[in-house]
Length: 288
Ligand code: ADP
Image 1 (cartoon, rainbow, N blue to C red):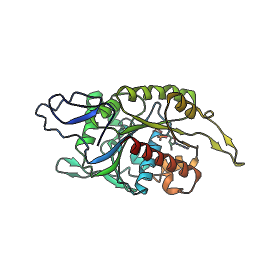
Image 2: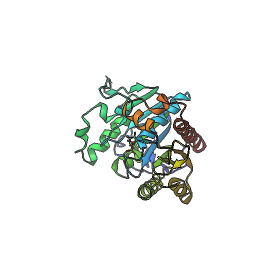
Image 3: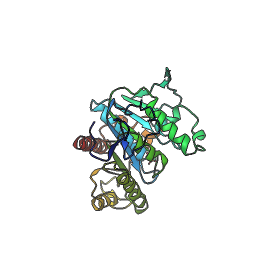
């Protein structure tokens, strides 16, 4: 995999490490391979604020890419609020173990790993930084990820340890940033954009979620403000990957484990998500 953005080699070995990180703590004997080298493209889905639909987009992006014929994996890196088990209807499932590695679960053609499959979600809430980082590294190094075209990380909201650990441990192809159009969300999204730029992770673009609500007469109610994401993208020089309306089917699909891409494939909302997913794939291909 080639990376124009900030990839560095460790000074004492020839192995590649993650974006922008020149150090690698386990490199003493340098037996470490580049993590996830069986994966063609690694994509982070990020947001400034919680509740903007980041996980919803990550899930539907993964399914959409899988439906296009790609081999896809999804890591729920939102350790403090894992929603992948719910959104895939896998709340009571546990991964199996081979040797010392976990085997990802699979549903809707997507290989999955989430802290929610392993522990009670309340347990992780009290974890401190080092434990969180080691859990993430375990998801990267100790899960039997097969050869994949895309591995998607559903990041926690904001700009914390987990985001940095991932950005510095794996060679991210780029980040997709999800926001809603209102000013309070955009203020935080600016920080997420700044963080990825600082660690040399290319930003694939912005998805504006909950852009509007379509009224019965066909007119649009811009509940969270008019085109805020689009304007923000323009100011920041980012690609607008797509706009997704507010739709009850999206919320219901998330809650009942039947993402709307599958339950309502022909709705305008599903089509807008599919178009955004195709744009993500185009941007990844452009940067590869
Ligand atoms: P985040 O990952 O940013 O915290 P989620 O993806 O968990 O956000 O979404 C928060 C809530 O909003 C969920 O209940 C989800 O189903 C709902 N939601 C997300 N996008 C939409 C949308 N376009 N229309 C309606 N509900 C949505």
